[in-house]
Image (tube, rainbow, N blue to C red; front, side, top):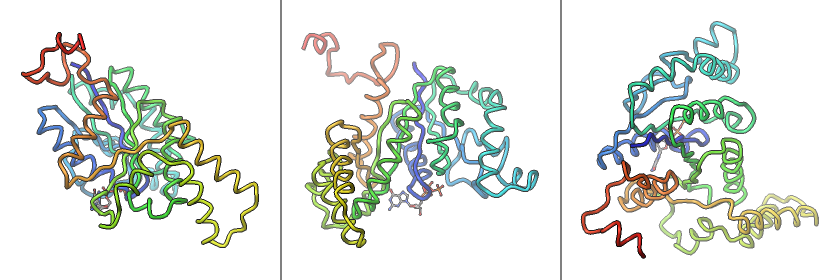
Length: 282
Ligand SMILES: Nc1nc2c(ncn2[C@@H]2O[C@H](COP(=O)(O)OP(=O)(O)OP(=O)(O)O)[C@@H](O)[C@H]2O)c(=O)[nH]1
């Protein structure tokens, strides 16, 4: 049986902790063995879930602020550097979890996934320890009402995809909050991005913000739409925790991405009514 990890990333308030808690329940109901890891040393007080590993047992932002007189962002960087220097501590904690499934709640600061090397180093440590890692990048569904905002969220996802080099799934979080009038057609333009629609919306956004649209910007907007559509760089999975089917779909995609179940010795159970040999012949 393999070892799996979901690295849950996204800006502050996008729903990472909620995702971890709800994903934990779903995985446990499916007889997996999930563990939540809190990787954010800045969380004050109690976590909204029961964690199996909490980086705050090693170091906290508050400790670093007091010890070095740093502000919160500098202290966060210092904490993660400290974690990487003491990664043996984390690996020791992991030793208790053979064959298990980690759900890792990450801090929301974007620079951790774009410029500084800590999270990449952390992923490499997991891989070294036999984990198959999938990054789950969350973007708030409310962003789709404002395409320039949505695209900036999308480029953040893209940056973490390029930087972390793991299997990667973009998730549109909080879909239960989408306005009632949102049609499947509207949503489809986002989930399977329509380049022309995106560049048109970028042009429109500039007009609304009274920005002067030079040819150069027009070409840039067109190029952004094209990159996202033609190179299939970004696909989103909508997630609505109020709908069981939505969570099932996401889990299926994660399983496929992590190639869960390909290994005969473990992974997803094959339903009783399916003959694997017959299936192979198809
Ligand atoms: N309706 C709805 N609300 C959600 C959902 N996910 C999160 N929220 C709410 O959004 C707020 C932020 O959620 P968190 O899970 O704390 O977000 P986070 O990304 O962990 O936030 P930070 O830890 O600050 O980075 C909370 O009030 C949640 O209750 C969701 O799927 N649906």
